[in-house]
Length: 101
Image 1 (cartoon, rainbow, N blue to C red):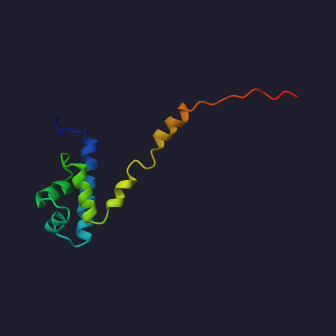
Image 2 (tube, rainbow, N blue to C red; image 1 turned 90 degrees about the vertical axis):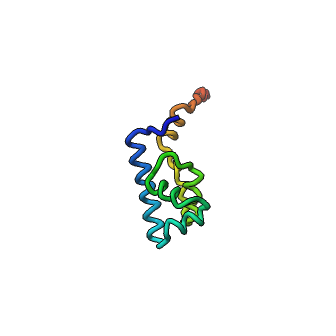
Image 3 (tube, one colour; image 1 turned 180 degrees about the vertical axis):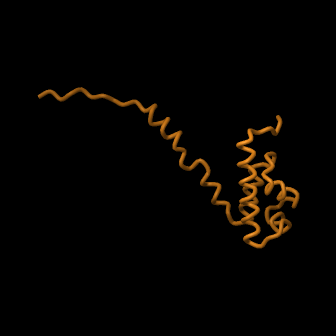
């Protein structure tokens, strides 16, 4: 399986990587310190910060944990407006007979 992704997704990966890098810098942590805390190599942290698509989500979670941002993962797909709209469309509406007096 290749690593070719649509450009839109590549850009989003780079954005996430940049946000993680910014979080590290705000905490005044070196790549080596985050790598040690996330139990991975400094090269892996560099790949995360570049948004390399082959880095596993488990690594991202360990890096977020090292930065004390692991709860942010719970925000993914939280709203899902399109999914809820589709669900609402598929709900069957029961019709009741009119009340006879």
